View 1 (cartoon, rainbow, N blue to C red):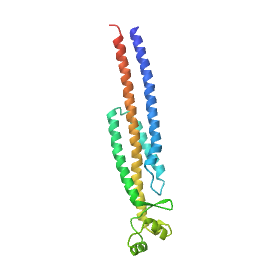
View 2 (view 1 turned 180 degrees about the horizontal axis):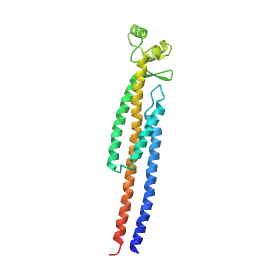
View 3 (view 1 turned 90 degrees about the vertical axis):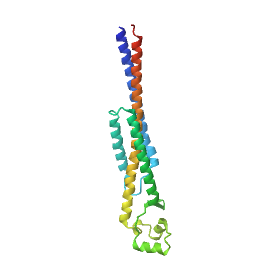
View 4 (view 1 turned 90 degrees about the horizontal axis):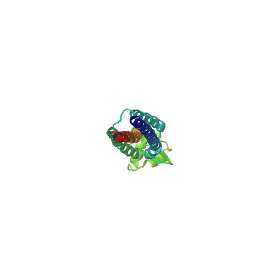
Length: 211
């Protein structure tokens, strides 16, 4: 009878711990999703031109989904912390690159953001040289009908726009993967703690059995 009672106690402890672990994992994933939708959007703004926002959301969702699939296979807490650290280093590096290039290659004119091309058109180059080379992109926009295509070679504008998009495509999903891998690590920690509590309870019940 005592063995049966002990088995019932173990089953009840196991049943009580597993839902708690599942609830913790679900809460962590919901929190990570909220972070991806708010903080990532505040940290990283898309470059001008193109529909980068939707494309990045898709890439970030795929990357986060792959990590969430791995959480059922990778049960090593250390592995998840190493993944989080790796994604953090990569995301910060991509963010610094993207921020540096955004500050150098974009400007604001009449509340709109534009990309600066690398090569001026010939007549614009003459205009700039006549003024000693100290002409800002906003001044050029005012002088040439507010159209970047009238100032820089269109291919140079498109090339820089694509490069900005590339760094943005790296930066935002890496931040999202950092948050998701952190959530997976917390979930793995919660699962290990729940399993430890079940084993400790079983050992305690075994010690109470009469010798």
